[in-house]
Amino acid sequence: MRFVHGADFAARRVTRGLLGQVRKSA
Image (tube, rainbow, N blue to C red; front, side, top):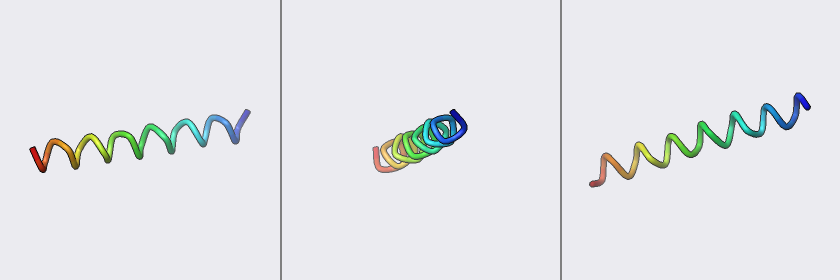
């Protein structure tokens, strides 16, 4: 469960980073 939680947290962090890049380029 700890591994899954860490993976989910990392995925959210990456998703937020990608969204941030899209907003900057927009």
